[in-house]
Length: 288
Length: 334
Image 1 (cartoon, each protein chain N blue to C red):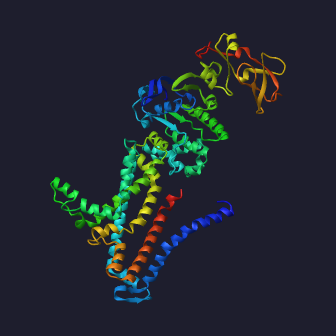
Image 2: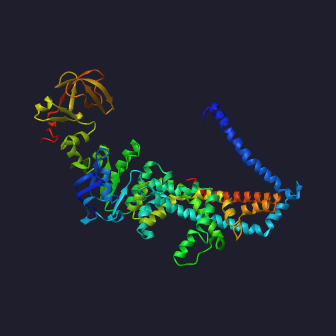
């Protein structure tokens, strides 16, 4: 990429990608922004192009906003903690030499290939179902009452479903990080008298910190927009209405495009605030 | 304090026997160098002593205590790795303190030992830096610092200088040598570089394919190599070996003459040849001589100002009492 010629060639070659990105991202964003300042309720035939910040005020002051925000944060935090802790443990396990390593690794990655809707339905009908679910059989077999996961602890159930989907991602990234650890460092720590737990605490965990940061960042961005899993399981009931789901309800169930768009823009701003916040916390980790 | 005895130590990975049963005694305070070509098992042997690998059979004793099944930490040894193996997220101070912290040593005593080690190794100004901000030589010193604060029974070095450039390597060689004189602790040093072996060792152990070919002081190995392998391995440039009629004249299957024990002359001598390449190093000149009818190339080490060049005719005479004789099995004839 040194000569002027290759630079301009590079620009021409990335131009289509930049163009597609612009069309795909910028136009919907601008349209949402436009609608968010409008009173737009298509079923009633109302369209008032400019009503100022009314939609924003209504969205932010409604009682459902705060509860949705808190639900979202709990959900993201729960999924993150399960995937990070589980991912680190699985990565350490998969790093051990064992028979059938390649096959086991593919099995571990498999959940990532399952579509969110499908995996949520499978969990709902095959695991959590009170009458026929595997967990019910297990509970009955052990002499307990079957537990209706989705209605009695719906938030936890959704966290489990989504964590199951994202565990492979965390495991994969953390596994490559574990593998990049210089084995001589572990041997040196062993010579220095560090038992296995101290080696994990002082050598492996600091080495993984950068990978953990990356996992947290990427997952947070994706998890803030969980939708399908909520849609096919609880439909947003029983305290599982996240911000994303609230926006959906405003637009499609209340048929209020303006209000929903304002919610969407608020969600975008919140996601950016969280991302910047995370970046600053972990910035130190990323630049050494 | 640091007497290490290996008794019939054997190591096999699956069916591959890397180290056949081997006996070796290392006296307290000795600087022992394991030297050999790559893949000769010298690093494995060091790791067996360190406890990073388990012996397949045999015993390792440190100060009369059998440690064959003792964990690495409890053997009282410290190791310096080829990659230095510093902990990248800890400052130099924390790196050096790590073994002390793991042994739950009193904080004041820790600080005292770190300060002492830092002053010996000229690291005092760098204690708060991270390893990534140090040069290769400084990292090496941190690794050594981490080893000496533990006051181990013996130090193990696994090719510690191989990642340094030539000038730094010479400096560190001198530093490690002086450190050994100051601490008077047993050191075991693995290298494939025979110059490091010759200059630093009290005792050299020459290994080939897991077998000990010879154990002795550097000069013993130089003057009395026990077999052809040691003769060819120790000394730079390597010894010239002659077989056939020339060797038979001396009653041997093979004779060896070191390059520095051949006297070149323009006018007369025992063997006649033609100069191929002459390498002028200033202090010395290495002559590569062809067409002698004895062996393909003979290397001669001559004075720095010798006036011999490409295609000159040259006569060579070996110094009579410096000829090494070997029998058909490659063993030295006394």
